[in-house]
Length: 189
Image 1 (tube, helix red, strand yellow):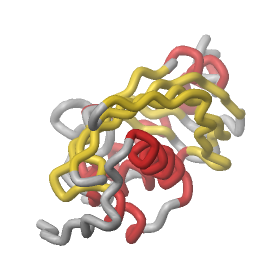
Image 2: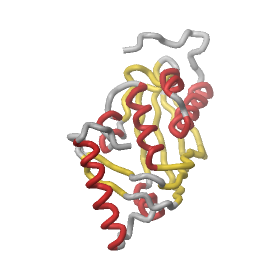
Image 3: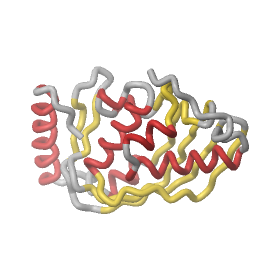
């Protein structure tokens, strides 16, 4: 566990300060390096959305959030969050965003035991979907995240639904590859 905390001079305290950090947290998912995650994410941070993500994303702190970013980047190129609105109250920031990207790799989800649940073969299609992210902060660092996402809209735009016979076959092969990779002890991002 990392015990370093931001100094009082650098710890955001006002709603506009933590809003700025919240926006940076969304941006780092697309292109942040490990050091950025260490800087912005509290060692005890929890990502409430990681329940269907790879097992290595389910750990607390910067390591889990960085693993989520790598998982998303492995499936989606040109990943970006446009922040439309931001509201801050006390230690909570809510960001109304549009996530855009293009699926270039398999998108694999997992069950509660960390087993491959679904796999969506790359389609090369772009998507642009509305999401709301809720971020809570302690000492100016992200401590908790949860979201409301338009997963149906994303699935439609990415070409996953309605499924064609060809897509179903490609997804079955993607799921098989993901299971083999996971069984071999290699994370499938």
